Amino acid sequence: MSAIDLAHHIHPFCDMKDMARHGTQIMARGEGIWIFDSQGNPYMDAFAGLWCVNIGYGRKEIGEAVMRQMNELPYYNTFFGTSTQPATLLAQKVTSYTQGLMSHVFFTSSGSEATDTWFRLARIYWKVLGQPSKKQVIARRNAYHGSTVAGASLGGMKHMHEQGDLPIEGIHHIGQPYWYADGGDLTPAEFGLKMARELEAKIDELGEENVAAFVGEPIQGAGGVIIPPDTYWPEIERICRARNILLIADEVVCGFGRLGSWFGHQHFGFKPDMASIAKGLSSGYLPIGGVLISEKVAAVLAEAGDINHGYTYSGHPVCATAALENLRIVEEEGLVERVRDDIGPYLAQSLKTLEDHEVVGQVESVGLLGAVQLAKDKSTRQRFKDPDRAGRVVRGFCYDHQLIMRATADRMLISPALIISREEVDGLVQYIRHGLDHLR
Ligand code: PLP
Image (tube, rainbow, N blue to C red):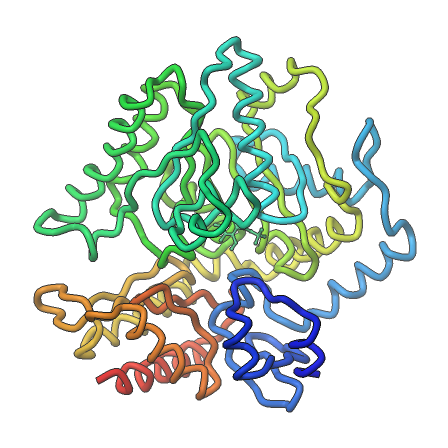
């Protein structure tokens, strides 16, 4: 199977020569937080696939609901004034989690398509309001907003910009609130304000009359699980309101319970004008995403006439069914509350025990999203000379010992399914400790 794969399949975010050396590992089956390869070897998946399998693997209820919908109506579109029952019910359901903030949703098949969607809607919004010059969008370094041309441009990943001549015009980046690396002598609170104020400086540079929106993940995910100081989001929100630009939250990772709230902006207490969603919406069982839209923005879009944007699979009835069934499970099992009150605090407390390790500079988590920051000298926050190598060593050791986690440079990232048990958390932390020992 591996040879066939290598002969015919170009994989996302993979070095093909490297893959040819190691072969493709074929994954075959999943159960809870465990994934089994085609040889039957078990792996603890501390990353929920790609931050998405929130209810865990092997939930037969989803398969059964999907099968019923497949047999009833496998597809119909939501263009030109039609809808389907699953798409309509899902629109009602997802907006109901927003405490009245979002009145509408525009469905997509992925987080990347959601990014392209709000990017266009934000420009349409200002055009309808008679301010067509408000087109520029401000994002952050090391952000990840997807892999489409607009998504990769808005993302702040240098290695992505280098391929394909990005970013496209009209997109600008400010710094990320990464206190451990960039905070210097400032307290986290001071640093949070400083980084938020980079937004104001960038608006001044571009001219308020030219700026449409600012976008940020409540906690930057792929950029390294960068948890902003508490001062950061209130200041960003203040600036967006004072300078009349739309505030967009990318909730693709933080949404649907990962932080112990339905959405990351609820955890940090700010109110975006639009928010992109995907991943945890269906726990990855089928591809579906969307953009949540506030009443304020929806009212303006209603004056736009035709909105010439959409995807064949916007609101796909089978994917919407998978999402509805997933959300039913999240609600019935109280997974959001479980993350907030029980397993999130337990993970935090367990991860904290790693701070006594000589190569750990800091451990941080919110809910079930966490990071272990590696350090060469924790007393001075000095990092390893080659941070990428440090992360690779720990991650590689863990993988060889059947624990799947991810590293962004020298930050080890943790994002398990919301159903992880306390015993599994104990095992996870123990494995990580062995990986850290290996770096000594
Ligand atoms: N936004 C964030 C914050 C993400 O982490 C991702 C994917 O990891 C995306 C957007 C893109 O989502 P997708 O891969 O479904 O296109």
